[in-house]
Image (cartoon, rainbow, N blue to C red; front, side, top):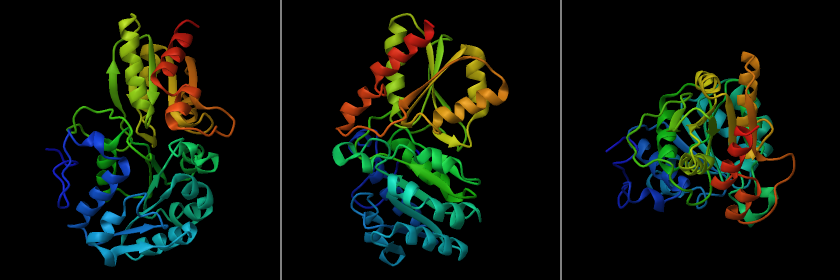
Length: 331
């Protein structure tokens, strides 16, 4: 059993049979509670959302190390910075839209600038809040956080990778922003024994050299399904899970560009400034001219609706990615 499984708190053990029945937030709540057994410096902060972000699990076992700041996210960020300076390892959680937009200046000045060991777990990211409204959609957070010096930005593909990213962050130097969804996102992995390392992408499919899809978050599974469908049509593509947006796996991007001659990026985020922007900057810096397309939310405020309806609207489902590949292959 891997380091992500074999957990943990009484009555809850992760297995491949249960991973698809738990959310990324549930995994986070369990993993952080398990880590705290051997690390007394771990503290958890939230902003009146312990039921939504599942940090209530941690409170149950470590109430003296749990802090609820109410709807005062910016104060929470400042307090986390103070705790980190005092030798604690703070994990703070809020909805991605409020953490990234409302707290941007505090994160930049209090956490990123002094390069503090604070872990920010941003839940309800992308379009996952669905009919909760556009005000609760987080489609700018990757762009904001990755523009801050010292910041590491991670978008796990599923629950398994969420657990691995949270664990990997325990002994990492500097601030980390981990972006996770709201509910039961589909599994991209079929086992939990793979190695996870910040800044090292993972090839999920490698069917040929017609194109590469570089994806993150929920788009990884959609890209894998698109690759399976295209392979049956005689089009072989590579799918890369770019779970760390910053630092980006530059070597993997350039290798894919040289070997397949075309790249599509897919992300549950604005096409401006996110994964697509990071890959485009990498290709431009290297002077590589390849066929290229960004799939994501265009330059608009996202529509309101269930996530399963919004993903096809913006081409983020498997069929949408498949169509983008066909368009670019034939260009």
